[in-house]
Structures are given as structure tokens and as C-alpha cells.
Length: 411
Image 1 (spheres, rainbow, N blue to C red):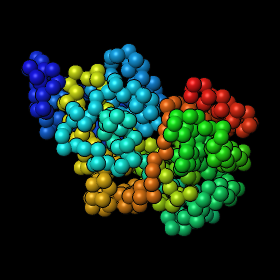
Image 2 (image 1 turned 90 degrees about the vertical axis):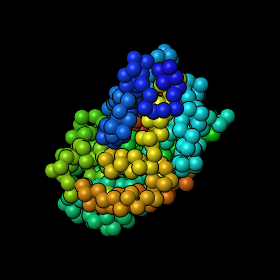
Image 3 (image 1 turned 30 degrees about the vertical axis):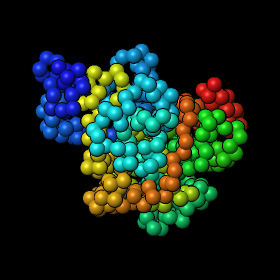
Image 4 (image 1 turned 45 degrees about the vertical axis):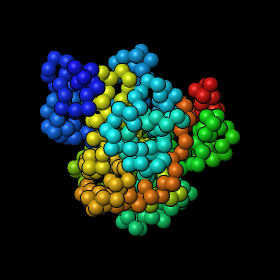
């Protein structure tokens, strides 16, 4: 009876009809969970899992908040990207406290301090188990660099990627000798630059500071000036054209949080193995872009079983496996220092990716605070405005749209 109500401490419990307990999990883009979910079901034969996977994070989170508002329809375990976490924290009562329903040996100190703090409410409830973080490196096409007369080995390119000024200067050199663009999209560059800032769109009191934070406008000016000189391919991230651009060589560089490695491999395909490279150099030293959490909504009929699944998926062993599949870099301390992670070689890029991103992760002192609506400002305001600049809108007019749009979301 306890298992039927989803309150059993035994993961091997049965459903109300005596059959397996059916759990659902919702994720977006690439979490690397396909093989892991099959493994979990083999280890727990009385658990059956349905995986609902959405291609893009924006539509996924829109559906998540719609179902939260409706009070039904959510999966037992839901993934939440850090840019949308503040909106979830504002609705913390609709999620289970994992410190209460999760396995007792899973405590917040397993994760990097800033990672667990992001998902902890002011009264001490842990809403989500951290999955990955997104330490930043730079990916680039060696063949395109060589054709344009630029150095192409990982050490030789480091001076090009030392600062954003050196990066954009190298872009001018590149496009003068190549038909390809220097980078894929204004928004992708701006977002990486933005995540390096100590203060983003909001301060820690949840006040919108987009007009008073001069660093945001300075980044805007640098990116739009570079695209005005022809450096951007003008593609929309995760669109069909952007996906095919990896394979066709439409652009030469790509800001690479660790999870981007899996995207590049999938989209560039085996025929481009050896052409794409990654270096631990990044303009401004590094930063974090992305990272997610697994949460258990109060809608779940099997909250303890769901919490156990989420805890297992985010354990060090599984985080290391997910990194090997998709490049999602672990957020658990034990995983980041594990020899099997540090020695892990990515044959596609020809580099010890674990060691490289561990070095980049060490450069992230504190994650930027994300206020309510932060993810919506990025997805629905700054990214479309930057795209409009690529299509001919003046940077000044587009910036005015950004300020207006962000102000409306922050109200």
C-alpha cells in the first residue's frame, strides 16, 4: 500500500496494480541519459521509465510553466536549466524538498557550493539535484584556420583567444581571407560574454540593472560592431541552418561550454572528425554557460522513487558517463577529480576533454546570479534583437528594444 502511494523507501516497490512503477522524466537538448535510463531499469526491474525529450530549452520550459500553472501534466522528474531556475524557485512550493524525500546519503555538499546554493531556497529547501555545469572553452575548425593563414594547433591559437578584443581582431583577419564567417551568431557570442560578468541582468535583490550595468552595453557594442564588419554567419542556434553549418563549415569558431562538444559531434558528423578542435583558451579567461538540475514536482504520484532516480542520474558515476556521451561536465566534486574523468579522451576532437574542462571549471569562482525572468530575457529579448541586427536593424534601435522588452518581463 505504501509503495502504491509512492511513499515507499524501497525502489523495488510495485505500482498500485502490482506491476512496475512507471516513472516519467522530462529533459531538453542532450543530457546523455538514454543508456543510463536503460541501465537504471535493468538495475531496478520494478521501475519502468518513459523519457520525454524536447529539442530546445525554450519551448520545453514554456510547457513546464504551463503545466505547473495547470496543476497537472508534468513528469515525475523534470530538468530545469539554470536560466529558468529563478522562476522555479519563485514557485518552490510546487516542488518537493529533496532533502526530505530523497535518499538520506545525498546531501547538498556533494555538489560545488555555488551549484547547490542555486537550487536552495531561503528557508533551506533543496529543489533540484545538480546535473552539469558549462565551463567555457573555444572550439574551432582547424582546416578553415589553416586556409586563412591562421595558426591551427591548440597552443598556437591561444593568443587569438586571449581577450575579446584579440578574438574580434582575429575575426577581421580571418574573414579577409575566407568565405566562411568567423562565428555562428551574435547571440551565441553575447551570451558567453554576458555570463562572464559579475552581475547580469539582475542584481541579487532581483532589480533589473540592464540600463545601469555598463558592462552589458559594452558587450553589446563589441558584438554588434563585429557582425557589422561581417564576422557573424547570422544563424539561429539549434535551427536547421545552424545545425547544418557545423557540417558545411559555415563558421570557423564556436563558443564551447562543455555540453557543446556533443552538439558539434552530432551535427558535424563523422566525416568532419579531426577538423574540429577545442582549446582551453577562452577570451577573458573562462566562465560558465549553462547547467541544469533535476527536480521532482509535487504533482508526482511517486515522489520518493522519482527522487531516487534523480539522485542516481546525478551521482558521480553517472555524471562521468554522461560527460563521455555528450560533454555535459559534472557538477559533483567527486566526479570532477575522478581519474576516469581526467583521463577521458574525446577521439573526435583529439584531446583529453575531461582534463581540459576540469581546468576551465576551476576558473569559475561563482555563478552569476539569475533573477526572475532571466532566461526569458535571453531567449525572447536579447537573442531576437541581436538576430535583428544581423538582418539590418541598427544596433541602437535593437538595444532600445532590449531595454523595453527586459523591462516588461521584469515587471
